Length: 132
Image 1 (cartoon, rainbow, N blue to C red):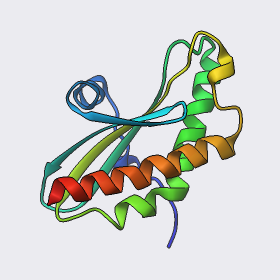
Image 2 (tube, rainbow, N blue to C red; image 1 turned 90 degrees about the horizontal axis):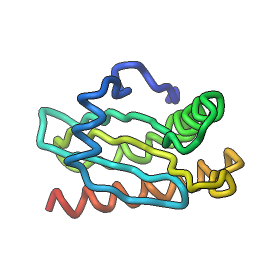
Image 3 (cartoon, one colour; image 1 turned 45 degrees about the vertical axis):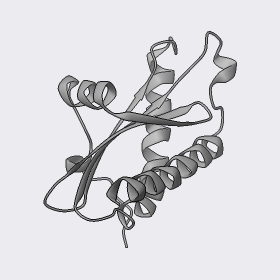
Image 4 (cartoon, rainbow, N blue to C red; image 1 turned 135 degrees about the horizontal axis):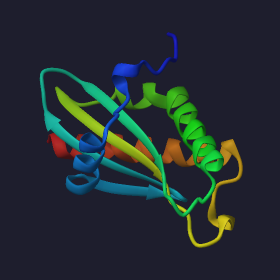
């Protein structure tokens, strides 16, 4: 199975992001937080967005962290998509939070990947509980 992240699976636009961030629930692992919103739909659909807080001052650093988030999700998305209960449509936004200092930021891809793995496993468990 190819591990790709097609454009139709990526959330874009202010409205979709703000809907998930304002109405959704959140879970956190390390400096990565996941806001998610699940609703009944026609089939199992997962759409994701990626963001970095503006406290990361340089745009190049924010873009790098978004690339790392996308890559870590892309490599592990099967864990979520194969275990979606029923016909849920899920919107999720993965956000890297940063404190006042950049010392709180994950410095390695392996750290982001580990946090993403924990978040995806916890999200699957929460969705299973909601479905019952």
